[in-house]
Structures are given as structure tokens and as C-alpha cells.
Image (cartoon, rainbow, N blue to C red; front, top):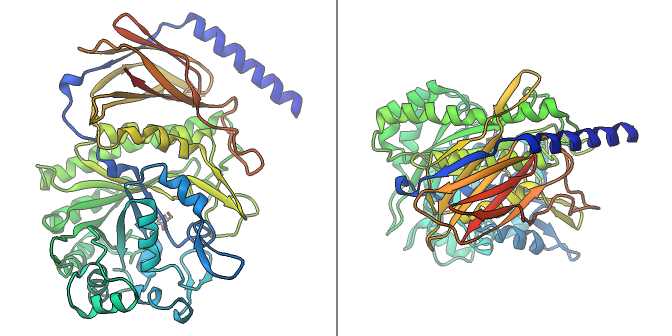
Length: 512
Ligand code: AHR
């Protein structure tokens, strides 16, 4: 076995150098004069559900004395990502959650059986107040999803009042009794989750009516006006977008589409770590579909909202693998390799291209669930390769998207073809240009000549994320297998920048 792996590595090494030697450089042309759209910082959002060890244990843990505490090291790592918002409490759990069970003295709160995920009994110690404490610790913005599937209009309106009412009101008074004087001023409010599925199995027409009833009672309080998020489609469910936009579009501010990259099929997703090149290219082929899917949903939205007032949000996205062997059923705990990292960067490049319509997105999920930023095991923690992509890309938050033309050919394997490279560029508020390049090809390095029309770069610096193996990942014993390194393969050459991009890598550049 060892011998076979070594030979494979050697062969890949030969392929890389042979192909690099004979290759014509690819070209990336950036056109700042044509820039129009700002990249909303809210596409870098996170998602945290009552699911597995995402909240309990991953973020919220009992200390030796039996008191709950936030895990400071996890919070500190997440804070570094400049997270713009955190979506909570679900996901499917949102349509199952009764918020009043999660307020008041913790020892008096009833328990809840989380029938959505693993059937475990939760003690409701993490509720509304704890969520907002975390929001403050992370310095981020809240995004709450209300219960449409099994709750009532009245109950959702009361939660909104409890959180946001600034003056005297029954719910605001209860909030004060529970120790919080000031309202939390939440703007982003989800009216249900996946209402076509776990959120109530509704038709688009039925949901549109329900949406209007629920949304009506999210009243303005003082300066606080709700940004109302409607359940959007899953994948290519264009019928959903059509029906909901047609019947309720005028009352919607954000439409929340979900898209997961599944290498295999639902139920047999495929291993997160044990895969070969067939699975590698299939993952990219499937992830890249989101570009067309966004375009088609956006075109439907254009019919009802030509001025693009309604944002398209990708409220759940990322790779969904088989659960890690030995992990608790229903907890959706998976590892995260270099493949996940490249899939994340490719998503961001696509979101940036659709910056006019895609103005919010939340990867699923923040800690210990699906394509997470952070994994924990007992007292230990690791940062995943995906974490580092969020770190690389945070410079694009709120920056001006720079249109680009990439001529880079394709990467093929056994009859499947995908683009070999992906790229994005933006200019931040200080005027600095940032470029990210992803080499999807796991075998061939690439030379890219970058030209920025009207700009003569004085210098360039960068970081790279790559590894020798496609499935390289960080473990609790070896947490630094896949970590960013300084990138020395870019240099200014006349008017352009020449980049030597290793196979299966992400490079983030900053120009001087
Ligand atoms: O992220 C896991 C689950 O996937 C969410 O609860 C649900 O909204 C989606 O189907």
C-alpha cells in the first residue's frame, strides 16, 4: 500500500513538471474601469444550528464546576474571520424551536428532544440571550430564523417584540426581567426555513400566503425595520422561485436559496477524506453548477423585481459528505480537506460574479457540522482548510468587484471537463487590489499572466494554501497539515504580474 502511494506521488510529480515546462501561460485580464458592483460583506456569513456538536460542546460547554461557558479559543479563532452575520437557530431546527423554552433562569428551562438531528435531549441552556452574547463576542450581526412550520404568527411576532421592542411592552418587559434592558436591534429575520421540505412541506403558493401573514406582524420598532427573508428554492427548483416571487415578491427583501455540493447522491454522499481523482473532479463539476443555477433564479427574480431590490441569499452552501466513521448518527460531523477549501474559493468567485443579486450567503456550518471552519474534540480544536479560505477572502468584504476575463483552458479526467482555474479580483476601500486564483487541476501547475488595465503594479505579495495530496486535512494530532504559507511565485514583469500557480492550490495576492 505504502509503495503504491509513493509511486503515485512520483508520477504526479513528473506530470506536473513536464506539463509546466511545455505550457503556454494563461491570461487573466482585469478591467477596473468596468467595475460596478460592491461585494456585499454578508456573503461571508456563517450558520449555526442546534445540530450535533455545533453549539453544545463546539461553542458552549460546561466547565469543571458545571457552569456553561463559551469556548474562548473557538470564539477567538472565529472572530479573526470578520464574520458579518451568524444565522441561528436553524436550519430544520428553526421550524421546530419554541423560543420561550430558551429564556429565563437556565435551571428552570424545559428540555427539548431534537427530533430533527439525532433525537438527543437538549437542556435549552443556549437560547436567545446566549445567542446574542455570542453575537457580541464575535462582533457580528444576528440573523434569526423564526418558526413557521410548527409555530404560530403570534409566537413569531412575540419573539420579534422580545428582541427588538425599545420601550414598554409585555415582551420587552419580560426581556428586562431576564436581565437585558436594551433591545438587540435585529434586522435580518428569516420567515421559516426550507418550507418546501423540513419546514412544513408546503407548495410555493401556500408558502407565499403563509409568508405574507407572518411577515405582516414583524412590525417596525423605532429605527428597527425587518429585513424579511423568505424561504427560497433548493438547487434548481425554479418553480418555487417563480411561485414565491409572483405571489409574495413585493413583501420579500431576501430570498434564501440552499445549494449543497454532494459528490455522490443524497444518503450516500461520499467520504470526506477517502476519495480519488474521479470524486475530485465530480465535486467541482457539481459545485460549479451553482453559477448557472444562480443565473436562472436571478432571471426569474428579474421578471418580478427588475431593479434587483430583493437580494438572493445562498443561506446554506458547502460540501455535504458522509459522516465521519464512528461519529454520532445525525450529527453531520465531517472532515474537511484541501478539496473543501478549493470548493469554497470557487463558490466565492461565483458569488462575486453575481454581486448585483447575491448579497448574502452562509456556509453550512460554523463549528463541527458539515463544511465547518473549526472542529473540536474534547478540549482540542483545529482550523480546517476551509477556515483559511475565509481568512484569505475576508479582504473582499465590501470591496468593489473588478470584472475579469480568464483564459485558462480546462482540466479533464475520464470524460469529465471543468475549467482549470477560477479567479476573482476586487478593489478595497483603501484602493488596494486583491486577486485570488484557484487551480482546480490536481496534477498540473499553471503559469498565469495578470494584466490590470490602466494599472501598473509596483509590487505583489501573497499567501498560498496547498498540499501534496488532494485529501490532505488537519487532524487533532497534526493540526498544521494544511495551513497558509507565504507565496513567492508571483512577480511583477513589466505591465503585468506573472504567477506560477501550483496544482490544486489557492493563491491570494495583494498588489502594491
Ligand atoms: O445544514 C443542515 C440542514 O440542511 C439544515 O438544517 C437544513 O436547512 C438543510 O436541509
